[in-house]
Image (cartoon, rainbow, N blue to C red; front, side, top):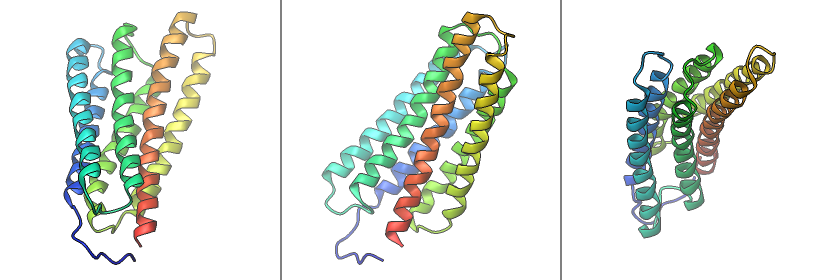
Length: 205
């Protein structure tokens, strides 16, 4: 365990918790587009606002790193964690934007399953971030995120198989493929968050 010889800036913990809470909001908005009767234009506006707020939190983290002498853990890990959290939000916003731009009226059921997994992973991440302060009870988090990522991969492969089964028109395939790939990228970014948390916990133990 590293010995601290100077006071450590602790506001990073609050900022990471804030960043993860943005993900919960984003995942909630993303799930709303599954409703065929939803006002997707309004959801898109709300999602862009949420993504902007998430960007602001990321910028505050980076600014704080650059102005802090003693950080709670390695600077590279702080940058990596902040960047991965931001990537998750970016990909969720991209998904909502594509659904609107492509005017997709209905998504395959597997997309709903994929989004449900993503929601669960975002919620777990929001619950885990405050525990960075003590570095306790985090192992279950990264193990479960890894399991959810594998589950998301299975849904992703099934969606692709269905898209190329001949049941969809060519233009539909191209549109839906872009959407499910954005969802997959969001889940991959969440796994990157969990992997970074694991690396930090190992270094700090």
